[in-house]
View 1 (cartoon, rainbow, N blue to C red):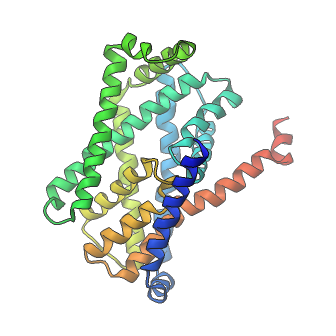
View 2 (tube, rainbow, N blue to C red):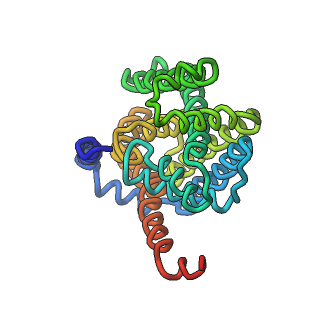
View 3 (cartoon, helix red, strand yellow):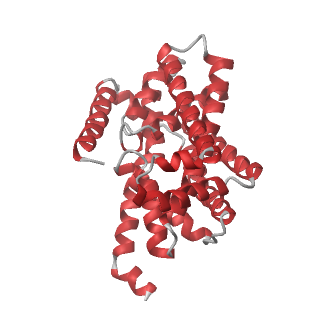
Length: 313
C-alpha cells in the first residue's frame, strides 16, 4: 500500500468519524451508556470473541485439506494478530500478515497460506452476499433508502467477481497463469492449488461460516438489548451483515468511520432514538474495533518482549 493510498484511507476514516461525532447528541448518548445493561454488553463481547476459535477451526480444516496441520492455538493467535493489523491498515492487510506469520513461525509456504485465506474470504463474502441480499429483498427492498440498496449491489458485484476468479482458476488455470509475471508463476501455481484444494469438506466449511455470521448478528442484538433498543431480528441481521461487508472494502482500516456512519444512518431510520443509536454504535465498536486495537497492540508488544522470547528459548 503506497503512502497516498494510506492518506486517502485515513482521510475517509477521519471525515466519516467527524460526520458521526457532529451529529451525535452527546449528553443523551452518555446517559444511554451509563444506563446500559452491561450483562447484555458482556454477552455480546463473549459471542464476538467466540468467533475467534471458530475461525481458527475453519482455517485448520482448510489447511488440512491441503495436507498442512497447524495447532488451533497457533491459528487463533495469528487470526487475532491479523485482526489487529486490519484495525490499523486498510485493504485486509492482515491476510498478508497471516502468510508472513505462518512462514516465520511454522515454515509454511506463504503462497499456500494465502490460498487457504483466499478460500476463507470467498466463503465469508459469498455467504454474506446471499444472506444480506435475501434479507434485503424479503424485508427491506421497499422501505430502506436507495443507499442501502446500493450497498447490497456492491456486495453482489464483489460476490460475482469472486465467483469469476474461482471459475477462472478452476477451468482455465493456464490462462490465469499467463497474466502473471514469469517470476511469480511458481508461487501462483501453489496459491491456486491451495485455494482450490482447500474447498473440500464444503458442507462443514459452509456450516461453520453460517455459524460465524449468525454469532455476529446475535452479538449486535445483545448490544442493542444492552441499551434497551429492541428491533426485529431481521433488521439486526441486515445491519450486522451490511457492516461486515463494509469492513471488507478498502475504504478505511477495519471499517473505521464507515461502519459508524452506517449505524447512524440505519438505526434512526428504523425507529431507534438517536441517543440509543449513539450508544449502540459506541458499545459495538468497542467490541469489534477498539478492544482489538488496544489488546492486539499489547499482544504484539508482549510477543516482542523478553518474557515471551525467554519462554521460546
